[in-house]
Length: 140
Image (tube, rainbow, N blue to C red; front, top):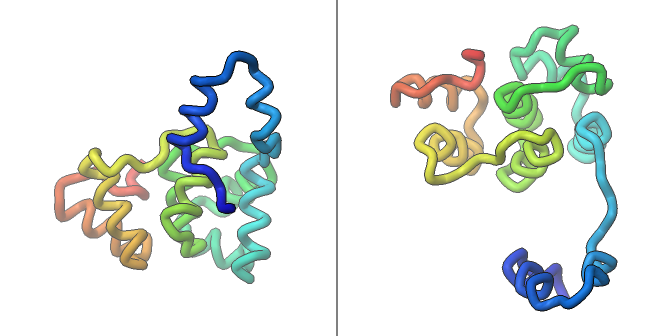
């Protein structure tokens, strides 16, 4: 049997009389640096290449990877796109970072989602955002 859908889990939680339900949920809380480094390994990427492609300040980017600095939503998106993450992986990275996930009803986010699902680069997505009058990811 596969993983339960969020809606199914929510219904089960709402029908529960006690909090014993949470024992069924995973406790794993991964940090942003842990997840970034896991992704580097999984995707056979070099940190220096990802940082270069992300267009982030090198020192700042290394501090994000080490956990010494927090990153904004746009900085996380820059790293996700530089790593070539798919939408699910990008949303996961945003969630772990404690920032809002991409929301398809938001015009800017919809453009970013489209770009990610079509395999567009950071530069291509930024160009598209600019053409539609939206703030680019690297504009921060």
